Structure formats: structure tokens, C-alpha cells
Length: 348
Image (cartoon, rainbow, N blue to C red; front, side, top):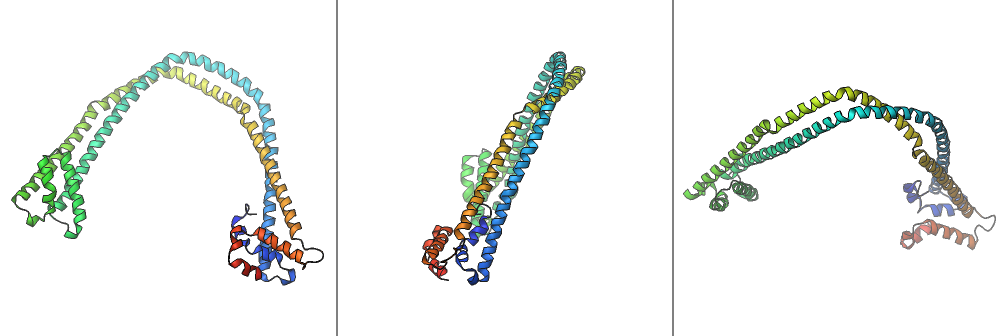
């Protein structure tokens, strides 16, 4: 039952021994509810296992019919496949030369496309670098240049300064400018002296010059693609189309014959497939497993019913009470056996 309805069994488990051990005339409403729920779980689990057996039996019968039908169709499919194979062989001989030309043209197109993709990737990288630099110059540089951040925001200010200095390094600015810029930019604009102001001006010029250079590199890369790689792809595409035109007459006949053979071969392969025998073993194993599970459940249920059935006489004897107490201890989780609440519950 724990496998069938684990949540319900976990809830019922602590209360079940007391409910089973109580005499019918002494049971209160909660104990009766516990027993009713337990009986329903038993019935549901038994029904589930019986249904599983029926489903598995139906699957076995259905698969047996499927195998018989497949055997009848196999011979006809083999004859058809043999005829289609001969047609496919004849068409393949006529097509071989044309296909070689098509493969060659297609390979050249693939090489040209790879070159185009590589060039486009390089151009995109340059564009992304230019946009990132524009973002630094357009936003973060203005903030620290104009001292727009309050003193309490010095962490954000230092973060902006690091980005500006990093961009200066990418721009190959003089090392002295890269060294002077951080301290200068940390000063408030009104506190900057002549040297600091000159440092800010030189920094700004270097940044704008670097952005302009990045944009120029991006534009040059895009222009080069149009003149070289894109034209190479267009030429390769034309060559491929010419090869396809030369191939079309032989290709139509070959494709038709090949498709017919492939379909016939697929039908034969399907009938010969080991999947049918594998499936036969699977459904047989599933039926055996379902029957074993049902048999085991009924055996466990019979043992449980025998162990909980009231004796014909001596129900209040010490031996009967010990048996009920032992069954209760077995049904409860081990962790609860030593809990402080266990004696109180038993007493209740």
C-alpha cells in the first residue's frame, strides 16, 4: 500500500495500530474512519493490480495478431523490394557522374559560406566593441566627467572610472594618461586644477578617437564582406545551380526509383525488424510482472487478514494483547518507537 498511495499510508500509519486493536464496540468515529480509509486503500490497490493484469493480457493478444499479420505481408513486400532495387541500381549508374558534379559545386558553396560567416562574425565583433565603447563614452564618461554622482555614490563612481580607464588602455593611450586619469576623475569638477582639467580633456579626446577608430574598422569590415566573401558565395551559388540543372533529368528518374525502393525496403525491414520479437518479450514480461504483483498482493493481504482476525475465544487474554501490541509496533515507523509520545498514544 505504501507503493500504491505513499502519502495516505504515511498519514494512516501512526493511527492504524490503535484502530485495528480496538474492539468494534469500543471504536470511536475517528478509528472507524481510519479503518474505512484503510479498507478503501486495500480495495483500490487490489483493483489496480487486477486492472494491470487485464491490460497486460490484452497487450499480449494484440501483439500476437500483429505478428501474424506482419508475417503474411512479408513475402509480398520482399518481391516488391527486389523489383524496386533493380530499378534503383539502373538509375544510380546514370546519375553518378552528375551527382559528382553537384557534390563538388555544393562543397565549394559550403567553403564560401564558411568564409562569409567568419567575416560576418568578425564584423559583428567589431560592431559590438564599437557599441560598448560608445556606451562608456556616452554615459559613464559623462557621469564622472561632470561629477553627477553624489559623494555617497563613490562605489558607482569608481566602477565607472574603471571602465573608462580600461577603455583608455584599449585605445593605447599613453601610460601616463592612464595613470593620471583615475585620481583626476575622483575629484569634483569644481576642485580640479589646470593639470586635472587638461587630463580630463586629453582623456576625452583619446576616448572619442578610439570610438571613431572602432566604427571605422567595423564599416571597413562590412564593406570588405560585400566585395569579397559575399561575391564568393554568389559565384558558388551560381555554379551549384548550373550543376543542379545538368543533374535534373537524371535526378528525377533516380529519385523516383530510389524513393520507390526505399519505401519497399522499409516495409520489408519493418516486417523483419527485431522490434516485433523484442516487443513480444516485453509484453510477456509485463504480463508476468503484473500477475506476480497481483499474486504477491493477495498473499500479503491474506496474511494481514489472518493476523488481524479476532480469535474465537480469549480476545482479552494477555497473549492476544501481546499479539496486537507486536503487530502495532511492526506497522509503526522505527523512528517513532522511542518517541516520548508513543506510550501516551498507546495509553489513549
